[in-house]
Length: 340
Ligand code: SF4
Image 1: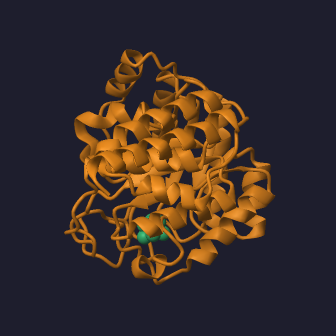
Image 2 (image 1 turned 30 degrees about the vertical axis):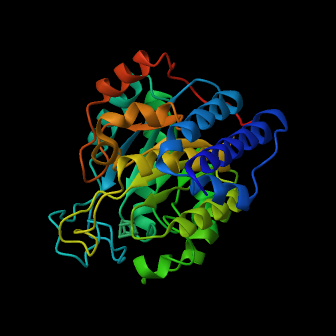
């Protein structure tokens, strides 16, 4: 294909995607998504523009903010090869016990003061043991009572009784990432399976909690595997999809991997929006180091939610910088209503 033909072909693909999503309100097929993902770099801005239109049409202009706290850091039994919280790797992150309730309270209050609507307690565990679950339930009750924030929890694999206990305590949302495509997962984690993760995700929904299930891009997966994980998420139907980019952590097996190039990150944010038009797409870990000064472009290219402040083991940028970025983009902070 010469340049002219390939340009016309790309523009035709973009127009078709726009018509399908905005006029016909139909989902793109796997083939359409694959064609769009393969567009040359010069069309990434075009992809992002359509992704933004779709986000505004289906979700509105609001951006949802969520604060998170690492309520139990490090010492995890699992071997996720990107994770500095695994006890199996010689990483600088050391195991700490469950945080004191006063520290949780302070973090929740500071999250509320930013105008955020959600606060997530994150624990580095395979799944919660009875003592840990009891501490989580205590923290959930305290945060709900004292801040009115929606409470989310991320504490690994759950059985039915644990999911019921969390739902009964008023946990609005549970985070359990699929991380990567089913076909690639065994290259990254061997201590539990992708299927176990998905089972927990289905359990969360069955117990009436919102499902937050995200991905981590840059683990060495191919473009086909990124599409695979997108379609697997579509099948799972999460309410919220955090998009993380690998921030290679020293001491972990992926500590020397390169970061996702910024332009490629924007391409995949747009593809995830086009594939999941009504889902909350949340900027999560790794966005600063991956996108640097292009972070605002992701918000104008499909993203409609942010994790603000600290990202567990790496410091996020100052939350006031994010608020300023949203003000500059005329994007109000709000709660994103149920999908259309
Ligand atoms: S289960 Fe979670 S905390 Fe544990 S090693 Fe894997 S990603 Fe890290």
